[in-house]
Length: 367
Image (tube, rainbow, N blue to C red; front, side, top):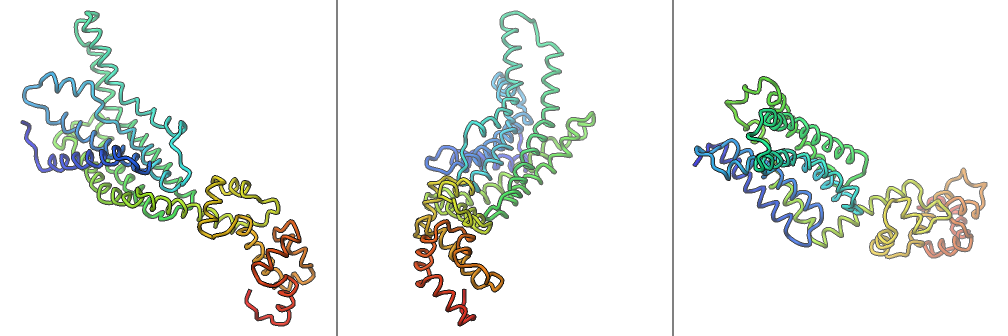
C-alpha cells in the first residue's frame, strides 16, 4: 500500500468531506436547486483530489484496474465548477431563477474532459481488432499534451465564470451581498494559488515541481473544500427549509418592488398588476402574492397609497399653489378623479379639499 504523508491525509479528509457533502446535497429530496449546484462543486473537487492522489500514489505493481482507472475515468472534471458557482449565486439571489436549456448548455464545455477517454477507447479498439500493433508515440504524445495543456483551459474557463459571477453581483442589488462576494473572493484566491503551479506545469521547467508533486494545487483545493463545508453547507441549511425559502424569495421581491416604487412606478396612469410585474421583472402572480401577504391590500390600493402620498407632498409644497387639486392628482398617477377622491378619503379620512384647507390653516401639520 502506498505511503501517505501528512499532506496526503489532509487530502484524504478533504476527499471524504467533499463526497459526503455532495451526496447530501445531490441525493436528498426537496432541496432548493442552489444545493444541487453546491453539491456539484463539492463532487468535482473531491473527484479531482481523488484522481490526483491515485495518479501520484502509483502502486508498486501496476495492475489492470489501475491502468483502466487512469485511462478511462475523467478524474478532473474541473469545467463543472465555473457554471455551478455562477448558478449557485444566481439561484440564491433571483427568486425567478430556472435551470432551463439556456443554463444547461453552459455545462457542455465539460465534455472536453472526455477527450482522453474517447482517445484511449478508440486506440484500444484499433489495437483489439489488430488494426495497429501498439500505441504509437504520436498518440501517447497527444495524451501527454492534453493532460499538460488542458490545465490552462480549465483555469481560463473557471476564471471567466468567476468574473461573470462577480459582475452579476455588481449589477444586481442582492441582499446579504457580502456573503456572495466572500464566496467569489475565495475562488479568486484559489485561482491565484493555482496560477504559479499552472505556469510551471505547462512550461519546459515543470521538473521544478517534482519535489512538491501536486501539493501546490491540491492543498488549496482541500482548504477550499474545508471552507465550503464549514461556511456554505450550513449557510444553505436554513435556505433549504420551505419556510425560509419562501421568506427569502419574498425578500427578493420586496427589494425589487421598493426600487421600482422609488423610481416612480406609481406615476404611470395606465399601470396594472401585469404591466407593473413586467416593469419590475417578476411574475404577475408573485407580485400579487407579495402585496396581498405583506401589505394586506389589493394591488390597486397598494399603488394608490403611494399616489395619495405624492398628492399630499405636492399640496404641501408652496411652489405648487397655482395647480388645482385635480391637476396634482393627475400628475401623481391618478387617471380618474373619482378614484382619486375615493382613495384619498379612504386613506386620510377626509376629502382632498378639506385636507388642503386644514394644511393652509395649520402649516405645521405633518404630511
